[in-house]
Length: 163
Ligand SMILES: Nc1c(C(=O)O)ncn1[C@@H]1O[C@H](COP(=O)(O)O)[C@@H](O)[C@H]1O
Image (cartoon, rainbow, N blue to C red; front, side, top):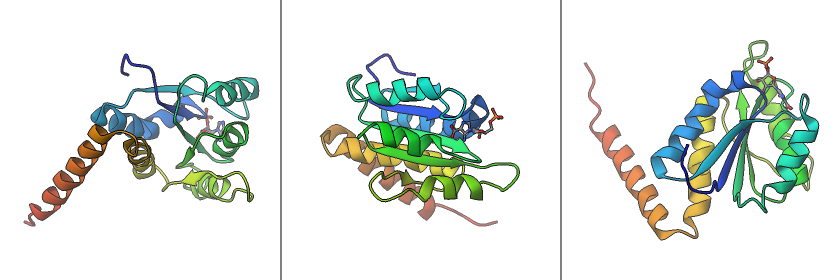
């Protein structure tokens, strides 16, 4: 975690989500975006969830990445309590392989959006890349790092060899 004031909040319903959500943290670290990461649950710590969402904007956050599995109400409930962009990551559940998480996050009623990403680590990494893209609108240096990241990724694919 970086020393500077966090501009992205990563939250998750349980520490069992951290192996997935770490992928978001790694991306933000790579781009030098200050973030905070914590366990906040709509189901198990509803008062903490309300406080977190209600204070997020005044604390300086620009976006919240919320990961949860199963009956994944956390991203939608956080979105209900803040007007910051909320990026939802469906964590892969054991019982239903994350289909439950995905549908609970993506099927928001009209009026309270949650930008929903793929199930699992790819979704967590992409949520962070999306947060970087949002922040890059107001930050030319960050935009340049995003362009550079894409160029390196393209080159890595062009360099792929097959045995
Ligand atoms: N979906 C939610 C919420 C919520 O949405 O508020 N809180 C916890 N959980 C999820 O329960 C799963 C199992 O949690 P445990 O491993 O702690 O039993 C996790 O994937 C978590 O995100």
